[in-house]
Length: 371
Image 1: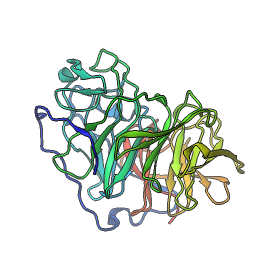
Image 2: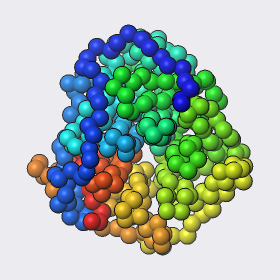
Image 3: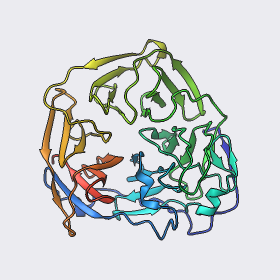
Image 4: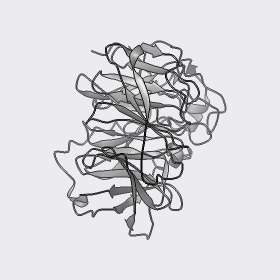
């Protein structure tokens, strides 16, 4: 069982927390998506749920994560100059709609600055808003999904005219209807912000890499403690890079968002200090620098979007390929880019869910690489 400090506080005004919709199969509304087609599922609307909070920018420098146990996509992000939102927003693959799991704090509540140094508002137990980069992870503990926040970016910004200390990772159980955020003890988070994190399902631990120092850190989400720190593991990748697990070979892969260099991480799960990292030779033409990327389990590719094209790295041959995106939209919108890290993959429907960047920002799209 998870051993944590559970925080309680006054109830946040608003509707009761949303419980996930149990989905037993693919959504028929997405069944006829063609290869290379992106379908506009509508503009992202959030103002009624988060008034005065500049709510759409929850995706700024932040990522969405696929929650496979509840078949939905999760976002906690924004922060800094973007938004002071403290809710988790969820895109349900049954309804194809966004809904907050619990209500956000109001702008005046966020501005009150009643904070614990571990990085949460004492009144509600909500984490402080932050850019999450590729540092949000969904881990499985005792068969349940938990959202974990590892970014410690607590700069001042919208509704919070103060810099926040964030000394502990935050954890939220994604199934219980009366769930609360939990926090362990303060730790020295040497990975900083702007790095990468990924859940390793073989060990049950989270692997963290920094964008500013050469270490690697292994974190136990069940005990909320660091298991190991591997010093001088590898030169750091550019901030906002991408780390993902390859289920076919059991390795992690890091793709540098500036150089597009691909690195393979061979974890030694019996002796973390003897883990190794190596550069993978690739062929084909990769995209220019971009920070959006997710793993497609059906087609065994890692893919993302740049300049109206979908770029895919074949994880067997390590060849880059690209195809133009065919956008279908009732409003003539098109999918040309991804807003920060707002992309992940749903294997049940064989689609990437994407929140678009420019020019038609903040639309939710379903994109299929290949049937």
